Length: 186
Ligand SMILES: Cc1cc2nc3c(=O)[nH]c(=O)nc-3n(C[C@H](O)[C@H](O)[C@H](O)COP(=O)(O)O)c2cc1C
Figure 1 (cartoon, rainbow, N blue to C red):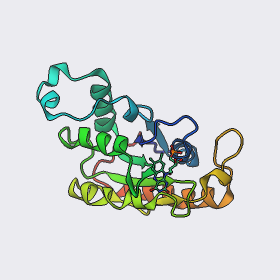
Figure 2: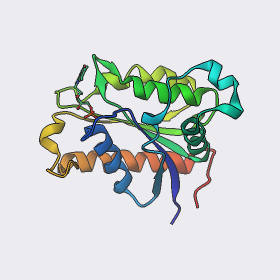
Figure 3: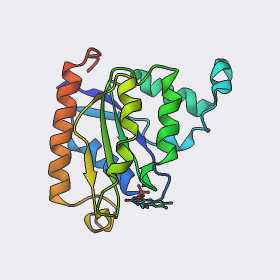
Figure 4: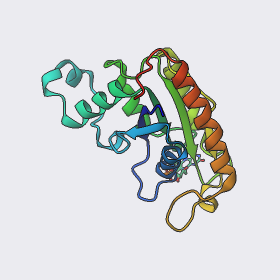
């Protein structure tokens, strides 16, 4: 079976994060993908173009994150919604990938979860112009409302509707990986 390498970006630093749980659900939904770098977005410094110009001295977390992005065939981004926009951690991670090119023209799946009724969908919309500018191939996103009621005691999503929605999204995502120009699956 082909296995695609996927960069996971989680925009939450919170212990017990619903978005981190959603990213883990994406990861275990299909054996066709192997997720890397899922814990790195929170370790990145704030994006600064001056640091970017000093390539040999880039912080280790940035180098590792960019290497993961270069290696990845696609991206899955799980972002919280703060004040009707995306978490700064999410946008910061994307900013670090603009100059390196690791995000360019790759299939990308956006996820969000929130205890509220909109499920964090307003965090996704402002990211879309940036991602499409970078050539991302966006597949249908997953939005999970009332997240608190849908996770089990162990913090993982147990809700059958959420699992089914993720299965459909990951199916579309892996189709996009198959049809993208990268085709590096092993
Ligand atoms: C400062 C702040 C602003 C928030 N704004 C929103 C919002 O606009 N919409 C929403 O659905 N949830 C909002 N929330 C609730 C978050 O969606 C909730 O904390 C969520 O659990 C964050 O994601 P995480 O579980 O992955 O950390 C906000 C939370 C904080 C702390």
